[in-house]
Length: 612
Image (cartoon, rainbow, N blue to C red; front, side, top):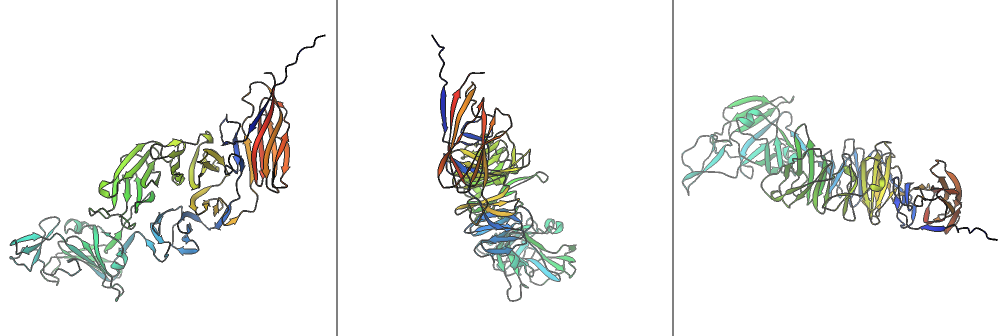
């Protein structure tokens, strides 16, 4: 008697022991996870739960953070440097902090502080107004501040002891008789003395000043609104009563401001008469008190490069689209244009659109718009050059996403997270799927790029981590980070929701609550067309003592999750969890846990069936 021959059911064993991280796309590899929370690649090729974080400090209103010799941050109106808290009367709102030597510059407040000597602090800008019931003088002088009393506005007879002011030209010209040539020659180095109680105390440390505009003084009498400071004299004996500053320039007339106790001011203009005594005023007018100020441009973003501060500004209403640089080694002076290599710098840009970020990369200042990258070459103002590249720039609102990891620059563009090596950027965030994100903030620690972004649809934040060494993404949690700073052996960040400064690796006060985590696989089994039976599923993992892990399976995209096992860590060892799924076309696996865990491998024994 003959019996029919039965075909042996083909059994295939598949093992996943190298995990590919986060991939939020419809079709992913079996070693990848469609969704996850609080997972990390720190123990690659395994996948494991992240470390517990730490709380560095709970601040009232943390608004900015920067790493120097100590960790520095803004808390409300205060600047905190290590253990020192300084009230700097800061405005409310997110800050930009940039380091230059021992100093930290704070925008948009335009303030500075020396972190090694916190008494050395103040405003980059100043505005001096002559005091009530005082007199201010603007007059010609020599380089030491001595008034030039032997002046006339009429050409005198040839005489080596007399100088005269020729007001027939604009600007006026100071002339002196030289016996060697028997002719009147122009005096090229001329100085103006500006005297007012307290003025020198305010102007010390600055190179340039601006005066308040007055159409009559500016147009008719040649008083300019901008001057370069030559010297400063501080009257320390009489509390600044006889203060004065010396600026480079020439003035055809003597000008006196007189201000009463109610800030009512009148202005006299005098001709030079060959003596220091006054003759009759040739003009008298009402006006504002003498105002002397130093200005720093309003900047959208600021960086340090080449011992200068660099910044950019876009203001469509006022037709401003510029890049600026401070004087070399001097963050207080932005208007020094004397033709020297140490001068300040400013240039207008032609591309449309607002600036979206700035960073120093390989020693060059980079400025971003959404569709452009500006790179500044050169060592001093006369040879500074702009290279403009049309490419993916930083997305608006994502300026804080800029971070350098393993000598490569990472940032968030409209198309996704980009990596830039100095040539052209490329998108590396395909694994994040088609979800749209904005309001990104990024930081670096070791080989990893941390980025906190907001989902534009759900308006919820997620903290993603890109492992640059292995090219893997992982999602940690819903942290809304407002700023990052790498300091020593940890990455510090401001948690905008908790109003705390936290640490990634637990520095400070470690969190005691175990980390809750999960990882959700993609659809497993789609690579085989026929029906199949997963006869055995084996997961090998290592759990910390007390860690609870639960395993769920969903068959054929039914939407129902079935608990197929619970494991509790009782000892520090690895073990296998056997699961016997039922026959299906495909299935998804979800592993949840609370506490430390490391998954080494997932193996499947598949018995292949028919196509029905």
